[in-house]
Image (cartoon, rainbow, N blue to C red):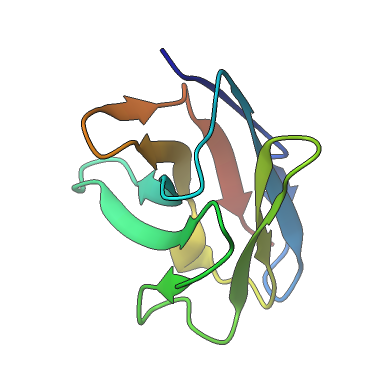
Length: 116
């Protein structure tokens, strides 16, 4: 099985930046898709960004294009989400996700709050 652990959440002011990390354990193959989702209270969980472990095909939700960047560090088996020019609407619990082609795994989530 794959274990995922998110970190880096916290409080940031509008216009500020934050970087989330998702550390994975187990074997990660190049075709696996790793991504970020978020869920605000009273709302459905929504897609934010994803990338293949090979580094190809980065994909973003329209709401974060141009502001967020997803990347990965092969040595650390970690996926990052760099969030810039943050808005109050970005406030949510952010979850790391990996699709293996057969299974779907989730981390526990990390809280991100954007407020002045």
